[in-house]
Each structure stands twice: as C-alpha cells, then as structure tokens.
Amino acid sequence: MQALINSFLLVFASEMGDKTQLLALLLATRYKKPWTILLGVFIATVLNHALATWAGAWVSTLVTHQTLIYILAGIFFVFGLWILIPDKEEEFKERGHFGALVTTIIAFFLAEMGDKTQLATIALGARYQDIVMVTLGTTIGMMGSNALAIFLGEKLLRKVPMKWVRVFSCVLFIAFGIGILIKG
Image (cartoon, rainbow, N blue to C red; front, side):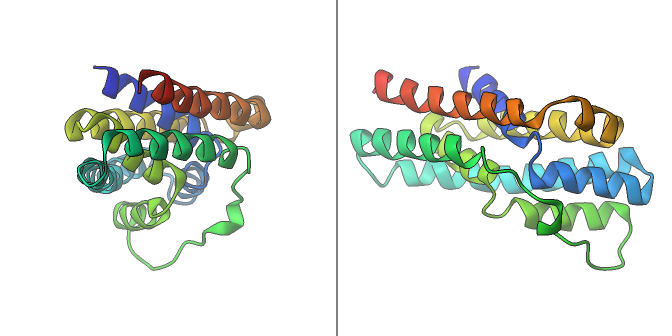
C-alpha cells in the first residue's frame, strides 16, 4: 500500500504544471472531448508507466542494495530540483491528423518518454519492486492531475500559484530521497 500511496503523491504533485498537463489542457481545448482525452491519457500512462516500473524493478536486481539506495536518493534529489524548472507549452507541438483518442495516446506516450514523471516511475519501481502498485499509483496520480487540467482547465491553473506547487513538489521529492537514505 505504501508503494501505491507514495507513487500517487509523487506523480500527482510533480505533474502540476508539467508539459503533459499542458498538453491535456491543449487537447481538451482543441477537441472539446474531455472524456476521450482522459481515456487517451489513461491508455498512454498505463503503457508508459508499466514499462517504466518494470525497468526500475529490473535495474534494482543489477546493483547492490546499498548502491541502489544512493542512486535512488540522488535521483529524487535531482528530480526535486528539476521540478522547480517550469515546462513551457512551446516544448511540444501537436502533429498528425488522427482523432482525439489516437492523438492523445501517441502525444502522451511520447511526451512522457524521458520526462521526470517517467524517470520518477522508474525510480519508484526500483525502490518498491512492486510493478502493479507503483504503476497503479503513478497512473492514478497522472489521471488526477490531468483530469484537473482537462475538466477545470485554465480557471484552476490561473488560481493555483504554480511557484508554490513546484516548491511543494520539490520538498516532496527531497523528503522521499531523505527517507530512502534514512531507511537504508
């Protein structure tokens, strides 16, 4: 259960203002099909995060426990600082002439490749070695964050000071890094 809750918290917080959340807002505005966009986000996220969690669990079998602790703590510290750098809408462009669902699946899957939430999912997979719970937690976190963008859109994003969301997310990542070092 800890893997599920921690995975949810980290991804939900780190997705606030992330490029994929901006992408969800853009697609919802363009297609006016919020449920279709949300389904596309779900499909892309499950595929991407299941692969990332599996990769993390696999990597954890290649190094000693102590080495893994230092690697994971370092990754969470770096992500904590990385999250302070805002994503820009210009970083992605919509391509193709597919419908809303296919466009969302492809765009989200590709946007998540190498993104901090995918890399965090790999680290969580290595930390907990529970592919199902980590994938479920990160997917729920991604869905919650992007559902806010899809259904509440610009109104919510204008009222939430992104600077403080980023600071909170940074603190959360650093706390996870410290927790990993302490629990050893």
